[in-house]
Image (cartoon, rainbow, N blue to C red; front, top):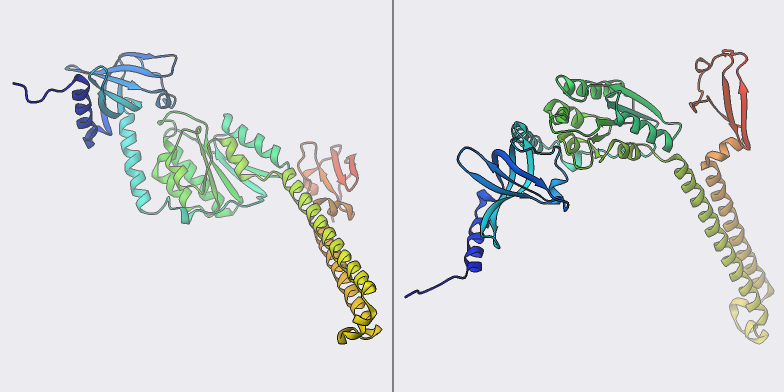
Length: 401
């Protein structure tokens, strides 16, 4: 006689709960050869891992598959990381894959996690040691390869946001042997000579091997030790390196790094002008309110019953009325004077006011501001901005002081 019988669903659910409760199977790393790999239109990937003695069914859902740096081919030896559980409907266990790496990358991941734990324990990634980025830097240092999309993106975005920004490029190798040493040396050089207000350190996207220079201890320690604030811009949005954790700010892309480091000059001027307009409006409104209160007080005085006026000891004489009006006029004059002072201070803050006072800014055709006679040559065209427009001129002579 059978004491207890399970349905198929019940036994599959029971086995699933056993596997889900096993800690080892919740984050397991498995090496095997890829077989029957197929990526469906939904984005989900199905395949098997095999060795000489067995096979294991695997699935990698779209969200995880999108972050893969390569397309697995049948016969590739890979490292798969994920969790093993039962698919109740079919009654089979399989690996739900979170990450798939080519053979050899597994060793890099182990080294990555080991170094990350070590540096984190030392406090190199602590939020309290991170510096704030300067609000309006005048010079930005760029540490990256002199060729490639990353440096072009940083320069393009920086110039668009602020034409007057000074950019200093320190060209370095960003992958391969010696890259970490070059990056660390560049950070040290900028700090030693205090050449920039903020640094952008990074490169474009790539595989874990190609980004490895930004995971090496020498690079990470140089980033953490920098007295100049650093924006890390390594790879694409899904790429994370140890430099990202050590930097004062992490950017998803090199373009975003330029947006974080370089102030939007036109937007900043518009903000100051808007605040100036708001302040003027508030001061004008306050003056109108005070004038209205004064008029009401005068009218109230005129409408009062004479007998009540003389009955009130505080208002027995015309002198009391005169004193009250004089006091309110004095308060009104003080408010007006305060308003004029505030308006003058706001005008002094406006960059346009500097030009209006007779100063000017001279630039070359590439919009570089001319600050020295050594920057110009005979026959060059210059653009001079004054308070009410621009003057285009040609250099005829240069004279020293």
